[in-house]
Length: 343
Image (cartoon, rainbow, N blue to C red):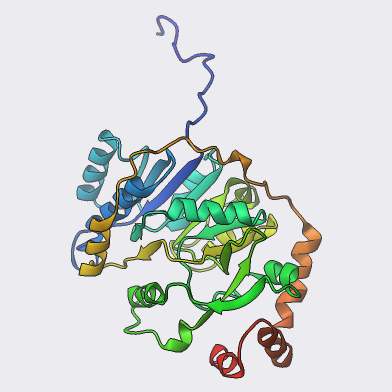
């Protein structure tokens, strides 16, 4: 039996007041051993985003088979308005499928997808937006430049800048941050040859961006996800899932995968150390957040011819050692540096 009128009937959905959404997939099956510090690390990630963002952004968290104790703490964070959207999956559905729960309906102009173990630094959002503004064809921008990404899904950039001095190997901006990243993935140190020079492009306004974009944190223009596969990923983690769902859509939409020249975030890993705790304490609260209108950013358009040439011709050029050496030397590498880049 129904009595009365549903007050929601025929009411239009209000548009979001935000132009930027952050999506955080979270998997903490227990709070022991490997995952002992995982929830604390997640909180550092979440609150560093909220502290340092310059726009009024929205945060979506997808609990992907996390334990009940973690879910209860997440519910408390949502009640306290630290999380805008919380999805709790009882069983693990995989990292990419967790992200898709939000991604397929997100309306914001910019969408940041981040692992739950990233510390965001002051200035990260502005730095990422600056790259989007300086490079109209940027489709994904990471706030962390990582070594040796210059040939990683960047063929469309080489196609455009092959004969331009705007694409050039320049000195690394923040070598200490590169070392920190190496430490976070288990490398005890980083040889100098890995943090000497890095592949970059320079815009007309002088903005420098690094070639390539990491998976663990990146901001995307919404339209790249028009190229998402229709079906969900078959992998819980790894396989070709990140390529198919976060890399290839950018390329198919004609977008560049770039990173900021300086470092604006840190990958933490599963163990906290004093450096991360000190960096977190240093963060300054941005209390003047405004509703940024990122709709003015240039929208990407499909170019199937460019996609074919870059992915099936330009990419193969670098398979030929003599051509690769000629190109890299012309782009600023010395003979010694070139040898380091091929070993």
